[in-house]
Length: 349
Image (cartoon, rainbow, N blue to C red; front, side):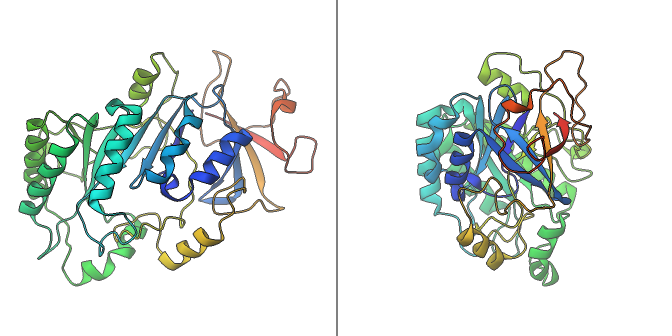
């Protein structure tokens, strides 16, 4: 399976110590967002985890922990955008983020870094096409030769939390849905700039109608082919069963928790209570097996593992009874009170 670390929060920036503790312990637990009484239990070893995709806007605190992950193929989705304190109040300065990306590239090589210019915000009186062309070109010149490619995404207010965070700007007309033709012209301009700097250009899942108006290659945020290229071998990874139409991502298991990121982005789709997120960050226990939570007495633990038999059929998202042929004594799970160390069922990824 592929671990996504994380689209729900910035683990490299804020929870690197917790993740390092989980790797050393050999296991991690993840609460299912839509069914919070279900806790997935994942063994962190090469048998179960095939690769990792990291997501961050500030890799600096995480750099000393990179050697812990040398057993796995991995790459970074590193977001660098040119907005200010109003839009991203908890993000380091642009100069600092540029410096950190270059340090990361020097440590792991450009082939493991995808620069995300995400999202593109068009805001009346502040961010227009000219602003984006100018700032994107500046960043593209800096990052040429430092990253594998660039992925660009238009602002998407369809997410419930993103819509809530943007509500005042939408209500005042300072941000409005971008017509597909205008978005296409902007993205095509950014593509030309990227290619002029020898940067491969892709877009993440575009708004409806946009693909029909432009020749823009679609990216894969969770890219099984890229992980196999980094690993130099076939990893036997599956496609996602929960993708949105047009999404090319492989299946992945996200280790993050909603409501724990304190980057303070006005367009965030994962945190709607900034002060609550700060409280959870402040009271967070780095030794907890679950990010942003603790194990509760009535939690239902579900073991997640890769099928080892060639005939096994991965199904992700469904559960089945405990198979007797699995050696559960090998699981480093110490929480729970029944004969299976708290595990009640399994998921095959």
